[in-house]
Length: 434
Ligand code: GLY
Image 1 (tube, rainbow, N blue to C red):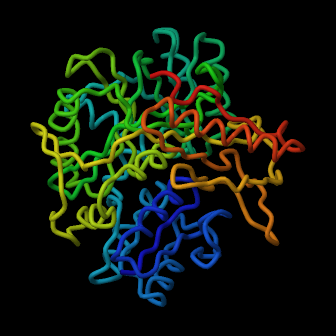
Image 2 (image 1 turned 90 degrees about the vertical axis):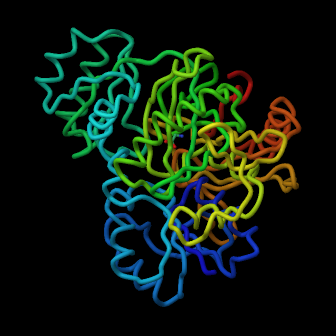
Image 3 (image 1 turned 90 degrees about the horizontal axis):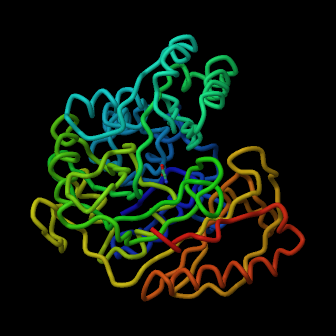
């Protein structure tokens, strides 16, 4: 089987590593990948967003059997629909354009959750600055503002006072910092609790749950600073019990399957308030694997991940082992914990330097590896290209051991990059607490 993965981040690099372990693959490409993916497996072309004809040419030329869509932009632009129309017998991982709207439009997602009685943070939707400013004084603080459309993980901000919310709304509507993605904004109730990322592989009718991961979205140690795409993660996250998983399967994932015949990965971002099965709420749906959670989840998955991914497209019968617990079917995973600490450019998610030279100590092992994200290789040397640069991914027999291994590597990394360390940062508390 010849496989093509679309995307360039740590998530796509993790998918590449996992799919390469499959005895069924004969070739795995990543388009465009990053500087830590072996050069011979990278497609040296601009990332696929909304123009799919170069993709169709490549699939035909390279006889690709299965396209795994890593990032949201092509899904929202309809890549699944396009490829299914263009090729007979071509398998695709990811939802159709309608299902992808659960991430592509936060207002669409909010409407759906309201209709389906899915617990979530209630929202007011504003289509103009004046509508948003009129609604603002009636909102409780803290308040969450969400750009309706895709904003590369930067569209959500949390406000503890009305003045900063007003300033942000002006930046979005007048300054157009998110372009058309900010034509509509959600003013949303802030949800208190601990976060859990639950990923479900869906085949239109049924869902398989992956082990829960915990993502750390704030930029700085101690959960301070701005919201980011995610600064680290660990798996398994231990704050979602079996009754809660069953509740999510029955009352949150089932309505998505019924309404959208959803296929691919459904990312259910949850806020957990207590141990009671229904004392939780959806923070967000996404239509693809999470980043950086995936880098922590995939190394723990037992068996051939390619089979699980193909099952979502009906390209593989369900002949793999599963754990059944009430309404929930779970993908088996091995013991231990995987911690992923994101190496970022100082200033991210605001302004940051690019082109930072990087050296990775050669102490990777079966228990530790580094996946690339915003990084490129030029003449055998590595340089940063964006805010989230790489992921240090460590396994340990428990959370503390995995964490210790990841941070020991980062101490070595600091020494090897003494000249550039002022331009880099990472959180010091990934997996230190729930
Ligand atoms: N880690 C958050 C996301 O992938 O959207």
